[in-house]
Image: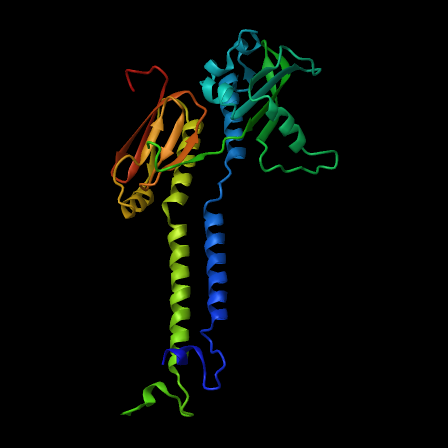
Length: 180
Length: 142
């Protein structure tokens, strides 16, 4: 009786053969692996974070196009003024900030303000568009956001503010043994 | 119809067994049903929502200004947690490490860092997660 499920009258293997189970297994494993890979993939929010960081800095140091006078002071503390966390940015090195303040002729008005992981500067340079506008994508490199805006400083002088922000903040899965 | 020794119910007109074909179809339907159930379970599973909510909360914290209250619809996450028999400690804001931890199952969770140096408190109001974002050291309102 059992043999009949697997063999037809001519004795040949019917549809529920070892091969068929093999095909089902391959299809099953394929579906399981691809679904797990798809749903365990990281949602990349690094570009968005870089942009949020840029906006936060702009909101903090520029008011209606006027550069806050304290920024030109060499003792200016970006982290405190803009309520950025020292530990996450400078110790854990998940972010990078570089600010250049230039006059009308492109001359630096003060030293560049640099915070965070300095390696990200190179990663941003590599990923920036070349002369032909071609962008090199690097999956594990930090995602960068760069903008230059016009500002008014020291009363009525016009200058430029260059801000580069980068993030390589990838979340982490917590195991069952860790305290949540 | 059901003659002794001749199960005509399981034979076609030519007298061939149709039982193996029925089994074949049933096994196939069963297999693809299990696969579809697996895909559905995976797509609505805790692992997807933990990551999505952790990142959403962290980005909202970074995007907001001090003295802001944010209300997030957390009903889907609560439903997923209930399916996994988890009712407490769904969200933890680690103020020291600046980390949002979302756990919707008993098997760990997902952690995501934020860069703002705020004092953040989270509480649930019905199906909503309410975030109170204050300036650091704002004890009076915190």
